[in-house]
Amino acid sequence: MSINKPQIHIVWLKRDLRLEDNEAIFNALATGKPTLLLYTFETMLLEDEHYSQRHWNFIKESIRDLNDQLKAYNSKILTVEADIILTINQLMEKYAIKDIFSHQETGILITYNRDKSFKRFCKNNLITWHENINNGVQRGLKDRDLWTEKCNAYFEIEPLPFSPSENQLLQIKDVEELERLLTVPSLKTPDDAPFQKGGRSMGLKYLNSFLNDRYVNYMFHISKPDLARKGCSRISPYLAWGNLSIREVYHKAYHLKKTSENKKPLEAFMSRLRWQAHFVQKFEMEHTMEEESINKGFQKLKKDISEIYQTAWKTGQTGYPLVDACMRCLNETGYLNFRMRALVVSFFTHNLWQPWQAASKHLSQMFLDFEPGIHYPQLQMQAGETGTNMLRIYNPIKNSLEHDPEAIFIKKWVPELRELEIPFAHEPYLMTELEQQLYNFELGKDYPYPIVDMDKTRKKASDILWNLRKNKKVREESKRIIKKHTLRD
Image (cartoon, rainbow, N blue to C red; front, side):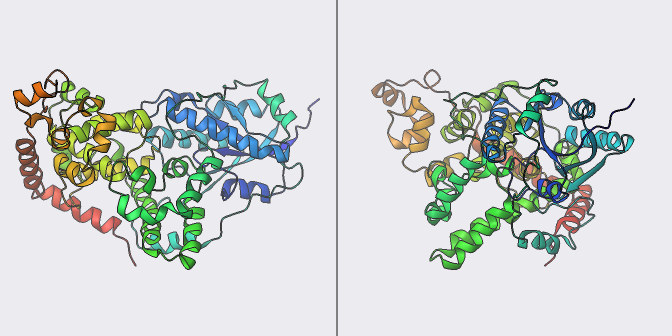
């Protein structure tokens, strides 16, 4: 005799680890049906080279924070370590599942292929998978003719509330009963890790402190490697993992702007929120960017792989203090401001003449705010392989003197240089043997000689890339890219 299973809806949480302004949750709750909130630590992603433990810890902290919020509703997130199809199959042994809600993920190729498999699975099991757009990014666009209009319409909607009816969310006892049937990971994380803590509560603290007073210095500090750590909003990890939605952040900044005496920094901040959506949309429409140059004419560009160069760059041992300080800071804290990110990629791809693909996975592992839709367009832009953007080869010494004139950032992250006078902290290789003796400092022992000649390598990269931009295929691709991605007003 068959037993009728209780029916539930499932919200599959991915990079939207929040309850408020979460369209998948909002749509599921609007049906009035019992709803289970689910997060799966998928084996394929746990093993993928784009990610590292700092990401999983951030997610675990985010889930713990969500569970704290859900206590008021006597509910919690079902957190599982397994692939999504296996998880749903196991849940179907206990519940009738006809509808699953999630957002459309603009992710790496492995998640795109997973979603295609999951779509087939849902169809075969008579499950309706409801996907909503995420942060204004539209799927299936051929060009940007209507994108701005659609994106504006998305941003203008008031953030969606979280308002489940009484006992609509699966109760804690029911979730814990499911946990006994599934593989449940520990949500414990190190207390002393030097990274920003995950969770909406922490994201709101960063956002509120920025909008309360820190935003005033936003435009002045945004390019400074040390001052940007406080002068910028620092909410990028909370946007990347969905603790905050871009729409709600935009609305908060917009309302503040109405009464603020400092409108320009808010306008600059809001503009970057829009650009975030633009770049993710670009990646959504050009998924091959994960492995290949968006401009196919640059795919003929071949660079010699040097493990020595790459290791020196990754570990902050290139002999160029600002580059080394940036890489050591990133490796330890998971954060760099935008200009310094551009600088280290420029140095890797131009001065070390290494392919951007060889930097991609290390950087994605180190960036706590790894967002594929930002990561790949920016990598290729800074590598000079779009054919549409100005070729920028950053000078580490010029940027060092301009943005860290007192060498505060350099001396913090490259302690070997702390006792040197400021000019030598910027350019230690200028020290004579006598000066090295006076400071009890030996180049090549206490700190490496420059790994390459910056002037020669800059000229080589510039000549090759500018000449390649004259190539017929590069020019054709540049026109294609501009036509496809130029925003229409």
